[in-house]
Amino acid sequence: MEYTELINKRRSIRKYDLSKPVSEKVLSKVLEAARLAPSACNIQPVHLIVIRDKKVKEELKEAYSREWFFTAPVIIAGCVDIEAAWKRSYDNFNAAFVDLTIAFDHLILAAANEGLGTCWVCAFNPAVAEKILRVPSNIKVVALTPLGFPAGEPAVRIRKELKEMVHYEKF
Ligand SMILES: Cc1cc2nc3c(=O)[nH]c(=O)nc-3n(C[C@H](O)[C@H](O)[C@H](O)COP(=O)(O)O)c2cc1C
Image (cartoon, rainbow, N blue to C red; front, top):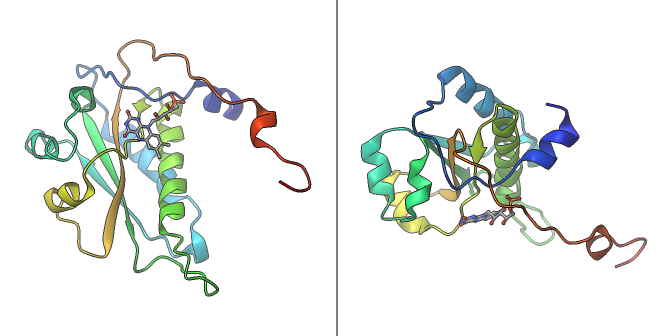
């Protein structure tokens, strides 16, 4: 899909068609897009957990209980190594969440390009998710997304006007 069309078409999808499986070939294209994302100092601290197993999904309900989330055939957990990530010397700003966000956005746009739906989810209990997914203590689970073919059309999204977010010369 052409880039402008892609960013216009992507929507958060909260209803999936479980009867349409996501092939390994398509999944690997989506994961590859995340792999190619830039990261501070090229440290590449991002990890992705691909969840297809019904048992693991069932366990994850303790961290995020919304029914719609589990209508997707695949769930991806976006994780980042906060110890490995680049830190700015002036103020110790940690780039981990920025790196994760870029990689996850690549993944989400690549998914949309394949006709797949996703939805950034942060409103889960991270401590519970990290325990269930057995992530080491230096790794944070930052975002989850379902991945699957959408069932129906999502609601129209509203955005601020450009003039409300863009400033010229000074804020
Ligand atoms: C950082 C972040 C966290 C989000 N967390 C959630 C969430 O926990 N649950 C949810 O249903 N949607 C979540 N969303 C999706 C937003 O609600 C959605 O992106 C926004 O309403 C705009 O709609 P659109 O994605 O269809 O353009 C999140 C999005 C972002 C970027």
